[in-house]
Image (cartoon, rainbow, N blue to C red):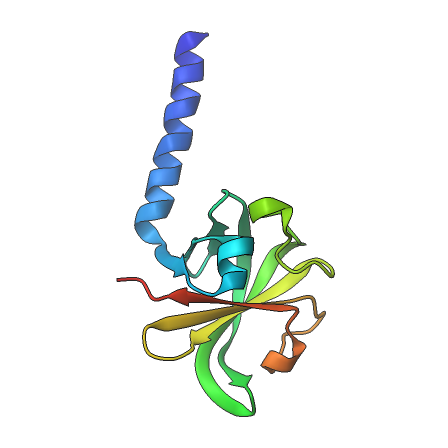
Length: 139
């Protein structure tokens, strides 16, 4: 029984280490990011929040995004299983429904914006987001 338990704990630890090595680490910069998400780890497959909650992506739906009326290179991902996870201090990622899409783009020198959406169709612009968070780029 102890071997089975140890094996299970080891497998979980190794999966966490593998995820951390593959995903980019973004340091929370904005007040909303610090109080809601904390730091995040993100790659083309998922986003993991500081408290361990994760949203998996089913696919990349766009490689450009309109922010304040201008098209910027970015990534828009469809969330595999829409949810509005509880994160830091009991705050939710969106607070107004399950997150269906996540978009990310460079938002200045050394910063990345991550926005979340509850739309049924892929969002075309930042005006459709329910929340936006700012992070320092991975080093």
